Amino acid sequence: LAEQPARDARATATGPGRVLVAVYAVFALSATARAGVQLATKFHEAPVAYLLSAFAGVVYILATVGLVRTGPAARRLAWTAVSIELAGVLVIGTFSVLDRGEFPDSTVWSDYGSGYGWVPLVLPVLGLLWLRHTGRRSG
Amino acid sequence: VIHPLAVAVLLLTAALAVFGIVTTVLGRPAERPHVLAVGLTEAVLVVQALIGAARVLGGHRPPETSTFMIYLAVSVCVLPLGLQFARAEPTRWGGTVIAVAAVAIGVAELRLLSLWGAPVG
Image (tube, rainbow over all chains, first blue to last red; front, top):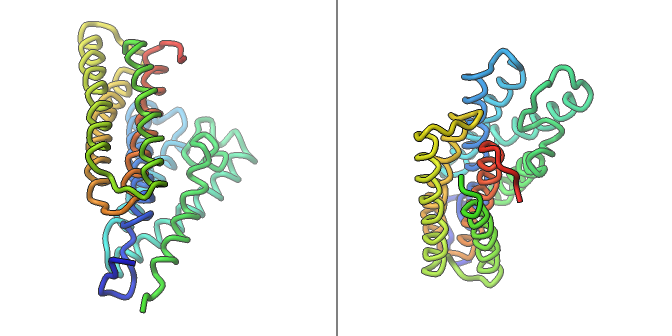
């Protein structure tokens, strides 16, 4: 590789990682904006779903920030946010399939993100793999 | 939203996404052709946003006007940001970054169409 940073772990926002960050940024924007509108205009229709959407939006924002920035703190932030994201899509996905009544309006993570082309399910897996890959010490 | 213009946006964003992915496969970084392709698509998006905003101000109110306006604003902002982010990447992956932005705009365009109340396709 031509560019070898002088730190133990490689930067997460270069090469294919930049594509990952771009997808995270798109989801951070869309999930947050959508939740904002829902909370502002029709909060009482499905408060659980909208609050979950907002939570998902915040998680995507934190993951984006963690992946864009370099350094141990940013890496920890990215690990935490992407792990919560994976747990979120699995838990909410399962609940939404089992109990329709609790989720009258869909969130990003409903049905494991099938409404968003399964990207919400694939993204955290790719994120964790990428963090592990870039976290290996390069000699 | 004017229907032919929306179709143009969908075709342009699809072409832009394919172009970005092809340059990644060919191992080429985001360069002048990318800037021109993004510029062309962005120009159509700006025209659409101006027309859309003018029609809303002129009295046509889609059911969710505020959501519609947010999508309209986002539709003109994402590509310039994506291009900048892609150009900062010296490797082949810049093209895919542009493709991600293009797909996002394509999806936003479909939402714009359904919010406006026009049939898609």
